[in-house]
Image 1 (tube, rainbow, N blue to C red):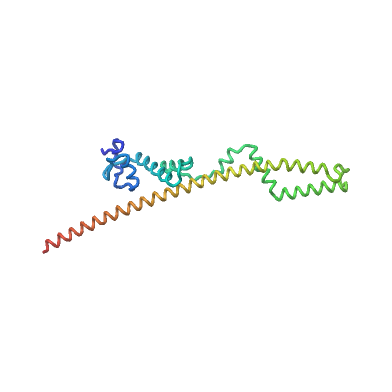
Image 2 (tube, rainbow, N blue to C red):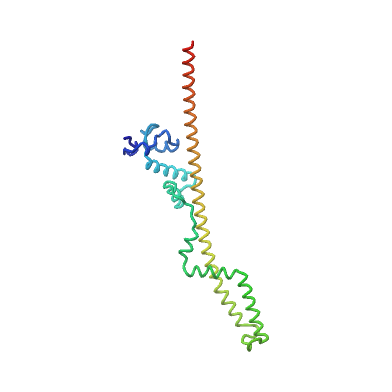
Length: 228
């Protein structure tokens, strides 16, 4: 049974890949650590995954500098063939506290036409009652000191509640941006690796075609020599 020339462990042929089928940069990376590794050497897929991860780390280090946690997660997802695309909205809804959900509802209601119409109706009713005494005796005469106190209290409470909701939305937007960045980065790396693989396959195919053409020429020359 053939062995992996990196680990020395025996594998079936379907679990091994020859060095000549590797992309040149990946082959050079393996050869830098194992000088005896050549075109006919075998490498097992677990070791190949490890070197693919190293290659991606080197590639990102050259372009971005020191890798962040996000870049490392992307490299790991490529190595493990994991899917990054997911809906993060349910996570926010699931882990939101009662105060956060209440802040969202209050901010949503405070920024609606329903609140504006209700609030102006309340002001008109309050002023009408205290100017004309429409319903009961006047309890807050002009300049409506009690109304000003209520409005000031409402503004003092409403402002921090809206800020809480905005902070929560900013956190959600930041998580969305990080998630989109991971997906875009993974797609870019996958496309780059795919281009390198296609280029390598085309070079190999052209070499084989040249060998076949050379063999055909040799056969034709041999046939001509016999005819002569």
